[in-house]
Image (tube, rainbow, N blue to C red; front, side, top):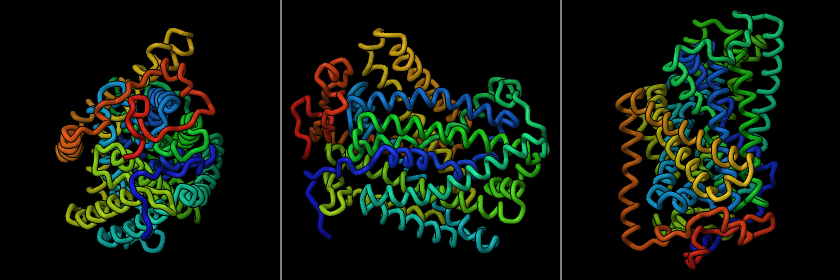
Length: 495
């Protein structure tokens, strides 16, 4: 295998705006999120499920705005890892990057298992309950996506266009059919606009529980920021693609949750578990509908496995390049321009977890603890990134009402929401889930302190300030995208 030294960078201009939008949609995994989480959402919020998705989307958009604004002044494959480190503190920045790495690694196991389960279910429903066989099938999908990601950003985009394209066509067709049936009153419960209001929440605790669950639906759109070094005009494109992607998945989430409330009974939803999407498909199109919706969920899971691999490997690449993790992780393959060492390491760790997962119980038990732990990791780094955007743009917030609202108030609202979600999770999750989430986060302190003591330049950053960046021309549409956060401080961009 021909590989580079760590001085070689990722391939610039490999992705177009359209490619990046597709990545943003795939990262949020609309069909997978609906299949895996709808039962939990309805069980917690009841008919207020659509409202929970709506009111969670508002602060989430604040985080999307924060990522877009930070990406304008610092194009970096590590995204929040760089931004938080340069605005709040390098230790918090490293923990942001570590949180993403941990969350993505856990998801690759939690996501691959249902991919295997649903794939087997397409052929024989009995096979879907065999944890060992589901693990083996899921590992096969994971290895296929690993090979695609290793092949480069362009190959990843082409594969994503096919997989997500078919998934979205199925979802759009069924969402149209569902809304027509809901509009005709052909369901278990007539639609009511109050489902988008506050009246169906069980008080403040019910609202908090519903929006906390809804937050998981949206996670993944920020893959666009991790791909910014490989995207044309990455300073602008990453943020725009994330905004469009979240808008698309929000519309799909609300449409299908409304359809679930209207077309399925409470007992059907409660006993549907991960098959609730199949039940809905069968209700919309008796006969083939259920299998098509399962196919959409399989494709969605495969698609988000790819984007998750991209996120974790680009984050590890950035850490290796900055010498906050072993420098070999920053090596880039000469032919494919991908961080091949990081990809191999992630693949090996994930396969070990696949093997270990067979000793942890059923597929549902494995998913429950892993997905709960992911919520702790993602709300932490999203919250820190939202706060970082306010700090980075603090000198420009009073220039206009738009700057104050879009650059200050909204990202800050998103940040506070994420921190509240993190705190509520600690009180609501099982002891096992909290132990996985917090324990894996604390494990990052060891490499952080080790490389800090070794003098990594990451811990001596040039502070990120939007005012100085724009004055220096860094925010201009034609300005080059640096590899590293340390150019202004006189540190080399390659190590």
